[in-house]
Amino acid sequence: MSHNKTLAGRPVISSTGLFTPAETITNEELVDSFNRYVERFNAENADAIAAGNTAALQPSSVEFIEKASGIKARHVMAKEPILDPGTMEPRLPERSNEELSFMAEIGVKAARQALEQAGRDVADVDAVLCAASNMERPYPAMAIEIQQELGIEGFAFDMNVACSSATFGIQTAADYIRSGNAKSVLVVSPEITSGHLNWRDRDSHFIFGDVATAVLVEDAAIAPDTHWDILGTRLKTVFSNNIRNNFGFLNRASPEGEGKADKLFVQEGRKVFKEVVPMVAEMIVTEAERLGIDPQALRRLWLHQANAGMNRLIAQKVLGHEASADESPTVLDTYANTSSAGSIIAFHKHNRDLADGDTGLICSFGAGYSAGAVFVRKVA
Image (cartoon, rainbow, N blue to C red; front, side):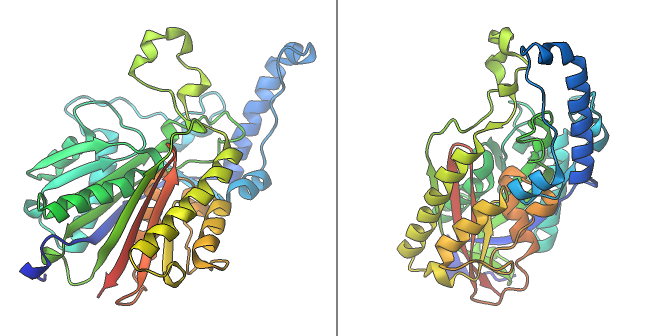
């Protein structure tokens, strides 16, 4: 450990952690389940369909999914009920208040890995931020439950900026370091996105997967010898209804809407693609130039893992050429979209080969719209 007092107030990423659920659903399995549901629905509603009162559902295909998204498989917390055409939802039995909740459990596993990687004792951690697209409950905060389970003193709170939660969490943690309000902050992103996905919707049934990540943001003065300097961060939000989920505590005040499709993930995919790509690329280039970084000289881009086509276009606009798999690695093919965790998984799995002094970008974008950029430089 370096303990250089002159570095105080300068935020770095000391380590990351990743929890991956054991169960995987391939596109072939998903399509088989979905198409059995479609056959059942069309048979049960044959008369209404023939009369023109109900639209027949269309089957899905592996080719459609992979062309639309680049996704080939996804990890989930509960595979069997999702693939059951009569259920098509995860089933996670409700736990008692004395038991660790599901989000806290997987968040703690990722956090412990990050702490171990950095050689960090929990006594040295000042805060926990649980940054994710959905929370299991409103209160007590998931972050405080994670804090309690890890045995961390200090404070903790939840934050939700949908797909950008982790990068917004990193900037928040970095600001605590810069201001001197903390020396060590855990940003934990447990994403059980299978719970908000409409597995019966052909346009989106393949999008999401489950995972948990953790990022340890610390003062450079206490960081491990190998770490990532945070050169700068930039956040941006623009209101849009093109990605929306209307599930919330006021649903019971309008019982006629309970269980409707808009209480799950809904998006206008083509509009999102068209509007988000230029917004994110412009934000990255502008912030890089403000920091005195040549965007085309970035060694690696760890981009949000939602759509292979979006990443290809954004990387091309930033780097000035078609990015190689080395320059812009993907985990989307095996993890699917894991909301805020995606860019962190990419960083966690694809950063060790970079050399001292290499610069890179962790970037997220999605619902809100929201976008977060974290420019980093390796110190080894």
